Length: 373
Image (cartoon, rainbow, N blue to C red; front, side, top):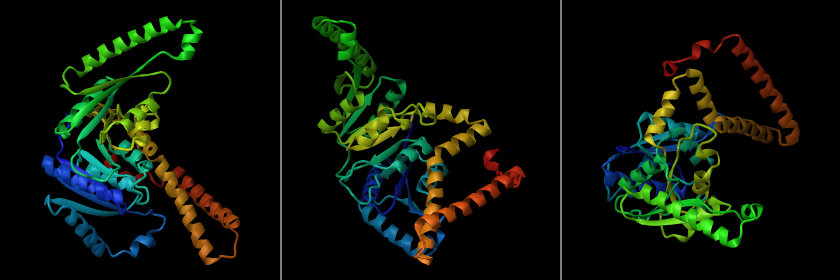
């Protein structure tokens, strides 16, 4: 079971970052944990001249004042770092550097507090850090009062529940288990009568209840709900979440380093993206350790690292292209965008071919560091 000693809160200029910070201060105070805060000025290596214009000392003083205003009552110690670059990489690296036990982030939807959906950065961070990630989607109005804990009755799901119960031990809990009922189409195909169908559904419910009760044996008394779904477990669970009065959804993951993981489209991802309440995603410690052991192979580690940052790398490259397109438009506004784009593409292609040739010649052979040893 994880303990919470170091908490990392990632902030930017959005409203929900302020709420994430408030939540981080509250949890750090209650758990007597060390609070680390990272503010990322989102830019890329593509346009450093925008960042150079910022007075870093003055900027840090301003951020510190905002934090201290929120920390006035709690009065906890904190460490603040200001970084410039890709949020996913910098936040992930900081989490590893401080050995963070938990990451807290706010949705980043251009200061729109009414929009509870969040972007790709949150998914990437869950994948990159492999630690519990609390996604704050709402204004902080005090401690969490009720946890909603859907489970597939697996061991990693139980570990996520135990972690959440320990972290938010004063909140009430509701456990949800969904079981597959009988498709109408399946009933037709097998020529099952209505009476037989109802009888079969009762048996499915009885079996699901037995399994659910067995799973809950050592979790203590709490509110429970069994959901029988015919076609879409995802939609039925979202409806269940929407009608409830819980303020935190807890999701267990079996890991995020392969295409079968929840990040790539299973029920947990669906709930994470569509629920309107704060969401805690938990990756079990054992599975995280097993994943790390498999990374002993250097090639495998490299492939996993690059794959996890594929979208980020490609996005940065596209941003580079678009940034130079803007500059050309400013410098020579009379030239058509299409012609500028074609010329830029040729320049990048020429450089990329040059880099590939240098790789063949072994130019980067000596660029390795102790990190890979």
